[in-house]
Length: 420
Image (cartoon, rainbow, N blue to C red):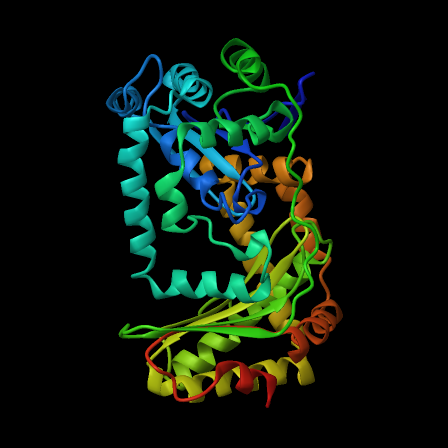
């Protein structure tokens, strides 16, 4: 059972107590990501996440690593389009000490200029690493085409030129705007009840965070126009992304979309996998994957192929899209997909890290408590007719976008998908 505690300054605490395990996962979730940035400070969310661990008035960067590893704990952080999370996982015996250290780092990082200079080099290497990953490039290009001119279209890492000039003042100004109590959720999962978690938050965290109101607004609904992006680069394989504007994060039809995605490209028995890989042997990886944000969403079809097979592979995908629109899905496919989705949800309940992430993100972005039982009921309610209506409304050529990364292709991906 998940419990919520709200504090007078706007901070929220969500707790999933599981006394059957001997570990605890704690995450500090902040509504700070690339969608809260401008073109001038794109990358500051990710930069801030990195430099948070470079030292405090009490710890050096080595001390931070040593403190957690001496307790056998795993500490890390990640930045997305709409949220940043700092988390630690430990055995229950050291949960309080780990939370104390995490809270201290989060509220007392010093952002020393020399340490920032070291870390900006590390982040530049991370940007370079993405340039060696065609799938990452393809996803970035898809975002640029779908959400052109908006913050959702920009990368999480930001351009290297931005990273090279960020200063301590930039970080502190950004945190003053977004790292505020009303824009933060503490998520706890594992062998710690709500009373224990509340005591730790009050003891180590509550009075240390900013109480001013979050100043930045979230990205609104974006009108998508059909477009394409191509990056010619000498990779051994080419990556292709095909994307349709779809459902936002809390859309009540999301379970319908998820059921269709499982049927269409969500596993080894899916239509895309069976046709493109098993029957035609054109791709090692082919799948569909919805992405959802607070006010926007997209339904993606991704594949990696040899450049010479571009026309064959994309034409085969086009036929599967046309078949889905014309003939819909079967009752058997819907029931199988629903079982797969429910199984994945139940399996996720066995991992306290997954629970911590799910409940933290949901509370931060939607203000709701996470419930597996509720999601299972929503999946059970999906009907074949719901899926077929979603297909007809979503897989339309008017707003489809495409991205290609790899050697010179033998055709235009977008033209094939649009039937031009």
